Image (cartoon, rainbow, N blue to C red; front, side):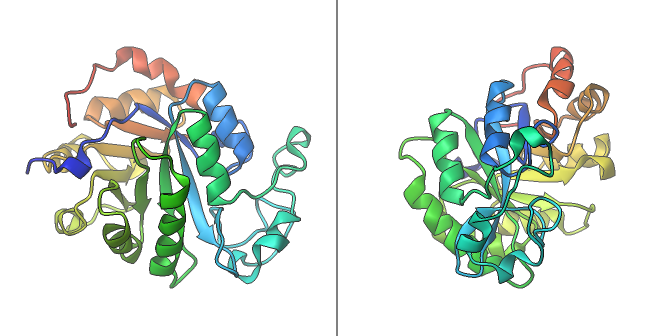
Length: 260
């Protein structure tokens, strides 16, 4: 199947996962800056809603692992999150780092001339609501004329919402476990990319994905050897916590053909 205009993406080879998660606290402005300092052209971040409907960067359903707070994200207002420390857990140099809003992140990414993959990471049962609010917010925050964000999710309802709200923004279907209905899924959602778990795929499965006319992105790849292997399968881009660690693999990678 030929790629639709929405799917014609200019993708980098390396995308910083949650910023640069091995070098700065994940899903923070410090993490985005760290990725930029390492020469990364794109970052991936996770988006959730607070109790009062503010889209913020956060991966987990709870605050415990990556902030000084405790409890579920969805039980806290943004003002409550603003009082938390989101950096000290990673290291003293990042003490005082805050949980950023989606607007904060998009503003910084645009100023740094980067691209971004927004993963809609809803709390249970809130896929459509999270996508609706986050993407409506992103429309206003993202500068006109720039390549729009890649919107990805494991949540089908979130991607269906993205189709309605930002039909001209590219969508990425996230696949953790190989699934027999993947082609029906990506065609129904008119996916721009197929984002897969590198540990659960191989050369044959990647070849099948690529035969759909969509580039394959693989997560989370943190060594040069692993990066070289998945690039050898035909993966177009990798998500990594440590861009410097995987950069040597780029020396062995041929330039991709357009649209792959």
